[in-house]
Image 1 (cartoon, rainbow, N blue to C red):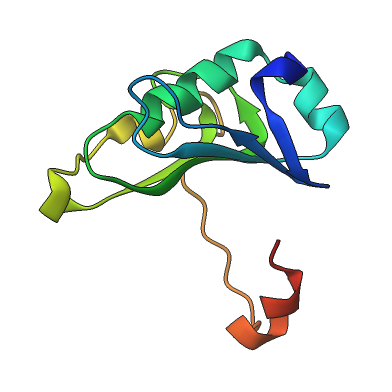
Image 2 (cartoon, rainbow, N blue to C red; image 1 turned 180 degrees about the vertical axis):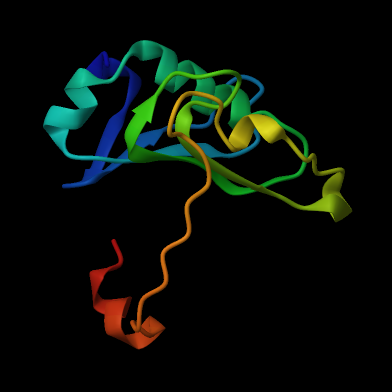
Length: 117
């Protein structure tokens, strides 16, 4: 990804500042080497999701982000129905082995609070 598209916020947090039709910022969680390997299409799709009605907080992308169909694969967005929020199957993923995953651990919120960035 072209580094001009993102602003480094911390070691693993990158910002795509709100511009144009974006309703919220875009945030990518990744190391610098992973950002360098990402296609510019990822940034475009993060911006597209950040422009959707009812989006809350930010348009996020995880370290495995790669461009997909509408949402980038590894993209995350939450939408408030009280603000005309949408429901989009594009956020689930369509390529092989992509989609929603759940992991159950014994960790409690206080166990990971110190790891937030």
